[in-house]
Length: 72
Image (tube, rainbow, N blue to C red; front, side):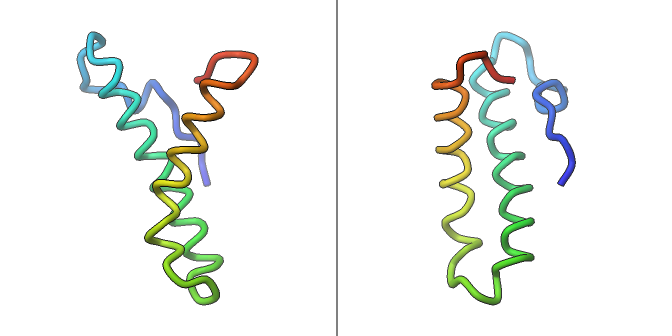
């Protein structure tokens, strides 16, 4: 899984719409992780593709608000 940059997520979105950029960034991270985990665990864990995106987004929000340094 490659790096998913905040700058790439911001491409094409007006800088005044910071929440829109974050939403796109979170969705891209969640999509990449879901793809990775579904490939690894999709045949063993039921609904891994259903619940992973929301779980990853919650994790990213938690990390970005609780981290000692600001993300991204």
